[in-house]
Image (cartoon, rainbow, N blue to C red; front, side, top):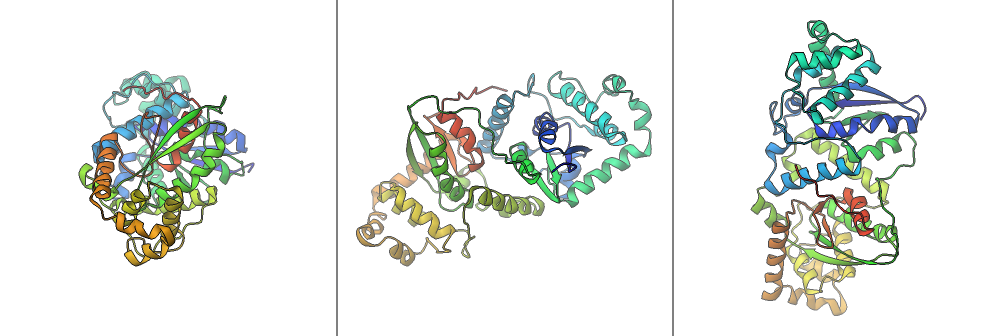
Length: 417
């Protein structure tokens, strides 16, 4: 959509926003749009949305250990996949208030963009101290900007507060956030949604196509209790088409998500623990993914779902994909309470009715317990989660493009901090 505006809300302190800063201008050129660089204070967003991190916190400070590891690995994986330069991420979280005030005080969008790039590079590649006023002055001078002068103006603090308030009013709860055509999108891996909102037929980034016939094992950790897990299951069929002619064997690992959450210290229903802005965004995000993938979803009237019985029945069927599909769709398309024995009896008709008897055997109960322990040990923090040929854990149906690349032979660099 020529002439459209992409409002990019960012803080230099966030590595994901740094990554987005290296991609957003190329995206805008493809769409014939313009990027409006809008600096905000991440801590201020946390405060405005009553985030658990608090004004001085960081995202990792409120994560359980499994999620923190997966989160860090995903960041490094994405930096490598997108060829974003960084020296190390072993830098303490530092306050970027001075740098963000300076950027907010600059009236010219193109100068603000150039200086933002320079500050990002200084922080994440050159490891320069952005709390040092002389460092900021040295970075700003080549852009014809006197940081000392601008930081003394009332515009510095006023504009930064106004930008942060505007972002929060539009539903932002963190950075990077991008606002286009009256819609907010959050995160680097949602940039293709930004392009689609601008009329571009964009898709999640793929780096590899299948080079020849071969084989791979895809491990699928799942529980029926999550709508994201259902969307991930529904998208598996498309993934298998995308990686053809590679022969993919799926190893199904049903496990009890609630028991895993209890062990790793996560609320049983994570969405309930989210602040309102984040919960509202992910509700819309779920709708976006269903629309993109052509998945019909009806949120069940009985939630959270009790899935012990359907998980045991799945194990009793030796993880028959037909049974798995039946149970997923019953819960997330037909609004059936699969935790009820009568409902399960109606779903498992004919020869499959004995699965309910088998589901109560000690063998099946032990296997469900073992699968849950396996998920904890593998580092699972949510569903769906994947492994290709026993490799690193990939969390989320939104990462199926990476899973497909791995099946096609892409090697995860497994970079270290």
